[in-house]
Length: 330
Image (cartoon, rainbow, N blue to C red; front, side, top):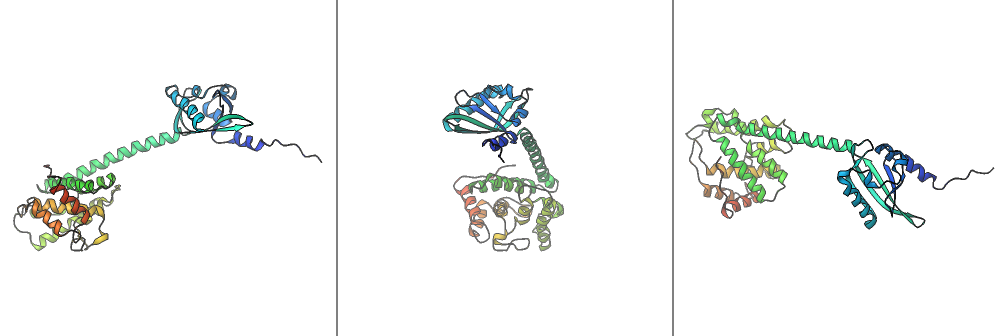
């Protein structure tokens, strides 16, 4: 029994006809379309007969005609071309965004250009919506931080400007350490509200002009736990709550709370700790006068790699002693 003859190109033809991506075959010399598959015809709204003999730029968005021309020129020069978001115009006049991949190949001594085209219009729209949502979320987050940083204003005259100065110095230290800008921003935001927990401290203790008792000090130390509890459920991109919780920790375990030490303390909190100590010692408090910047720098220098992070201390010392850093005036 005779077997029916088969076309050796039939499997490839089926792949071409059923491909999810739109496919255009262009004549290498003229650049005109000589073959199309159903996907590209549906995508652009043209019949096969209408697309044949057109130039690629004739179906492209006229505003970006140069991109289609560039695609052909690059294909002829390099043998391949890729564009991640090329605008094309459908027969109905709608502009769609596509991924464009093209390559040159030869058959029986004749060269052709094969273009794979994928409609990513919906994906781009979703990306734009996601970006807009992220921008709105970030704006809201910054507004929340700003509002929280001012909560303590009515309680005493020291905490809010203290937080602003510490935030500025923390950013300067982190920047001097060449940390990633995203991490630097997280440190800034944490520093702006690092003492938010003091809202739970009675104002007569916050404004006490005599030496603090052991009971007063113990009560004040509770502000890190309160601060942590206030922000722990806010989904920040950074470890804000943990930074607040640990900013009075010391590498040797002599800080509070829980006597965390060494690597148990996150980098953000180590930097905030140094900035907080230097600012606090350099400025007056209701219960004591300022100790001065020289005393503050001597404190972190003597505690370098013992109580305080060495890199943060080095950066802070350089800022004041070599770069002429001065505290801002909130």
